[in-house]
Length: 202
Image (tube, rainbow, N blue to C red; front, side, top):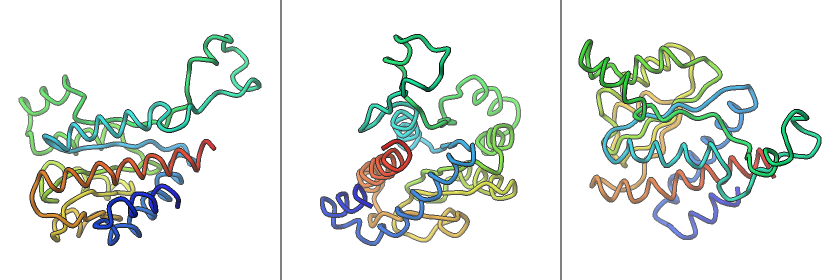
């Protein structure tokens, strides 16, 4: 896989993550082809990463993902020239209204689990971002996804964690300090986004 190999060349420290990154790419492509979507959850900097990842999936990332002339016959020429094919993706931290209501009315630990339960279907994928791999609300979301038959992918640090034990695929970047883990999560998810886009749209 070109973009993963290129990322490993630029960040040799990520070499142990290559296999998990390739497996994650295949699962993301499979989910899209089955009509599934991507759900993302995380806290703090990882919540911001959820926004970043969704931005790469919902519009063109490295390619324009153009609409062919014979597609969508009811679209105007202008629409076809401006719109780009997207990969359905929802960053759960961004649903501010329901997040604040559920945290206030019920239990903040269960907010992402609630959203997975309400939005998820078995064709989907849940991506969990947690530098420790032990964030309670993210762990509960992963447990809920597993109970629903949803594939789970985690991005964590190098230590064994709740998410590394629970998720179908765990990309454990080889760092233990929060900011250093976050620095390595970015090239990992950029590589995933690029590989998925290349596979689906080129």
